[in-house]
Length: 549
View 1 (tube, rainbow, N blue to C red):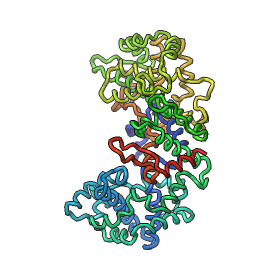
View 2 (tube, rainbow, N blue to C red; view 1 turned 120 degrees about the horizontal axis):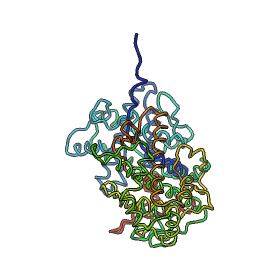
View 3 (cartoon, helix red, strand yellow; view 1 turned 120 degrees about the vertical axis):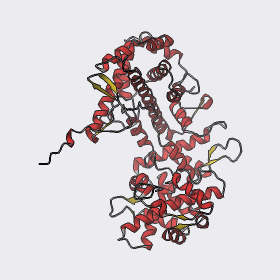
View 4 (cartoon, rainbow, N blue to C red; view 1 turned 135 degrees about the horizontal axis):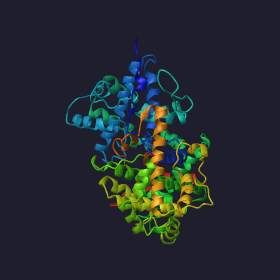
């Protein structure tokens, strides 16, 4: 008789992400602020290329050969990347205009190097699923992996159709026809069919380079209408995407000449409401709500980074002692109590002049840098940046703990208890049920910390972080059957599992939004050296004005 024993096998251990669940509220916030753009939808022209690719295939080939469709799709996916990369080399060499973030670029760039040296290129060498030089594992490449869900949400494609995803007749087909009218489609498919590509082929197809979108006027205008929801087809989501993009354009126009539009600058300006040099960032009335929501996002992200640091430091302390000297801690609480009475914690208390937490927070409220002075070295924005930079260097416990506590204390001091923790962001309590560390629970925790001395505060903070990790990991185990534990109780006491995860900020789709604005021609680089600063074009200024109404 066969006996099934898989149910008693240990769960598969994986690295996992968001070990405290602190990043999830951040993701919920920026998901509301930039819908229709994700952290993997990097280029605007893929929003039109993929509908065109399938529509154009349908015009030329039978629709009942799934194997041929998949193979031709994969070849076309590679060809698109090669066209953009080759165009960069033949023109200005500026990757952010051409090949950056194109699907399979890391594998295909060396292939282009060999082609330009005279070596023949066979596309199927990079599309075959069995090839060690395969450009992508997913059968439908970047479409299935990155863009399908977003294109379906925007009603350009229909992911429910079989045997493969299709374009929509209402929006996808007209957009595809606009692409077809601008490029040499027959030459494109001849290259795909032949399975062989030359440098001359790539040059003849340069109109399809990602940078050429503004030259395809109808296609570009359709995508502008889509991203800025000029037809009001996507209700609140379209409005919010338009206003976030408008806010980015407004910041690009407002920054002084010695500051480029970067994610760190965007974070600091949205958090503080100020430009570099403490200049007030005055945005139009219609964008103020969006700016306030981005402030909430950044506040939650700072909380997340600080708590991840406390979690990592706790794991470090549990894991640093060799086996002969290790102190067995039977519970999180016993470890947190011992940790809170250690010499490094006492040294941090002295350096911060922190005895009772209430007194410490009251004094900090009087001495902390103003929120608009985000360039000050003791501002939470700068402290958090130093904290993230110091972790990979293995900085000492005392310095890292001081930074994490400082960030948490500054967040507490700036909290306005008269306002909801998440401001005007749509964040119902049930959305936070599985994420115990969030802005609402942090506010309640601060109130509990105020009468504590510093040692008791640290003990409670460490207990909060470690207990939250066990809760989050247990939930993931229940839903996925996979273990993401980095801490576990054992008969030898608490044990650290796997590598200690570094603290990390979330990525709020800003880079993708800026790249899309570049691709449609709304953002451009100032031509004057040496700054080459990002500025809105005439189209960008017009779109910014539309977004501010």
